Image (cartoon, rainbow, N blue to C red; front, side):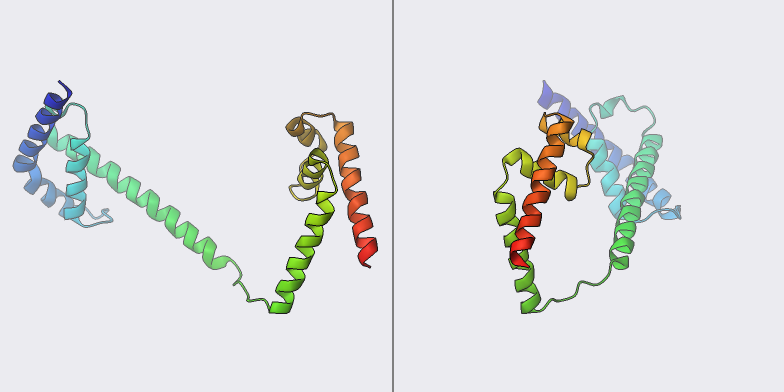
Length: 172
């Protein structure tokens, strides 16, 4: 039964295509607000019609095609706006600079030292410390996330700060 409905829809869309494709192309050519070519948009309209559950129930096919075309144009404009905004933001970012091998080594060694320092903490203390210091979360939010009390979060963060202090005292 499903394949019958699909065959009926294909047949109905085929009939709409044969009867109204020329009209749709002329209508699209007259529109000033189209972002893509009329041929592409007309094809997209008929593909959208194929995806509808019951094309045979459409009483005003031209009105339906115009509505579908307008929606496709709005979607395309929305995507273009997002793309342009993204490109603008991307262009506003400072250019990445290449770091020297020496700078890269310093960064890697620093990250290794931080990793070693954090390895000395319990899992909850490490997570509480990172959520507080890196993510900037409030102690109450950290307590909820970890399922502990706020006073335990204070202790965990204090452990992390003490460990960090000791690690830097040994290096300096």
